[in-house]
Amino acid sequence: MPFPLLSEEGWLRSRRGGARRLMNPFACVATWTADLTNLKITCSIESSLEPLHGPIVARLDKLLTMAALPKLFLVLGALAAALAVVLGAFGAHALRARLAPDLLAIYHTAVQYHFWHALGLLAIGIVAIHLPSSVALKWAGWVMLAGIVAFSGSLYVLALTGVRWLGAITPFGGAAFIVSWILLAVAVVRAG
Image 1: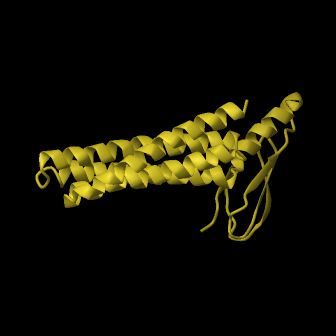
Image 2: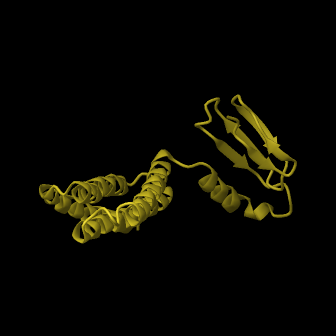
Image 3: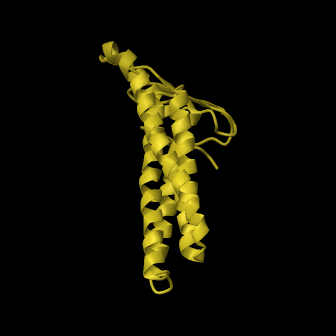
């Protein structure tokens, strides 16, 4: 599938790696590989705004080239949020008449924590754009994802099967949530 780049002249498309000069006020040059994994856009200003060149290029470079860690946690957060919405809708419409009220409440708790921590993954991805080399932030993301799986996953299965011993796994997921939020705070504090 071609990768579109917007310019004043319209969409430029290419199926092969290469470089194109985009005609716009910033005089941008885009380079990419054939598999579209390494997109890099470099810009310079050819106008009376020359003194702003450095900050604008730095900002554009930050926005247009994303490191793997932020992209990973943003994608995982978005997918986790989408799954939370699907599972929430499933619970509200398909399970209401099928589950006992106590099991439906457990399912609702799973969806609620799933959704809040999917947003947490998105927050970690956004912070990782600014702190891409933070080890604490990387751990925060992985531990939060593990928390979603352990906490919400065990509650989903418990609610759907009625197997009560699965509730013993849930506190480990809750502890993972707590640790991940603390790791996020540590990463931000260490950044200065």
